[in-house]
Length: 47
Length: 193
Image (cartoon, rainbow over all chains, first blue to last red; front, side, top):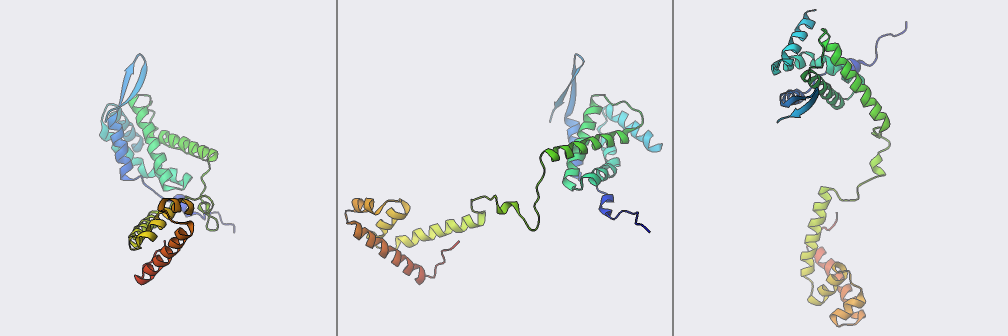
């Protein structure tokens, strides 16, 4: 019978982003402010 | 259904300024999105970068109020991640990454001529030791050796500067080298890199 299951089990590996990446994203979100002017939106990063 | 309602609520809260909602959203979908990216790129670091870029796009879109809530937050994020994965492969096709193999290493052809840190330290130590040994030589021999080796002067120039014939300068250089070898042997100094 032909093998129909995947040989490469690495494809199904479960991985999570590093805490440092999440921390960066949260800080990025906090620092990002959107300034609106005449229907235009500007990104403003305030650290 | 429960998942979608929760996501919708969290997105709405985040768009209203609640940063904590974003943290919950990221942590909730972290594994699913990252595993999806990893399954395509098969590299942890690249997956991490794409995950980060995905959420930067998500954050920008939500903050600009351009996201229309239809209860499909996760599929929307997955679509962004999918597009970034395609961008990654397109970019890689334009500039392929070369990793070499066990049989062939690109650094065997293109290399840095400079010494590595360890060899540079050894070389500095040898130079330093050599200067100390040269100080042990008789004045006339030391003078010729320094002019020849460190100042790169010809024997003609050395003879003019020291007021001796070229043959004498050559002879002093010869004795300087013989004496240097004797000092090195006597003190069992190793001067190799």
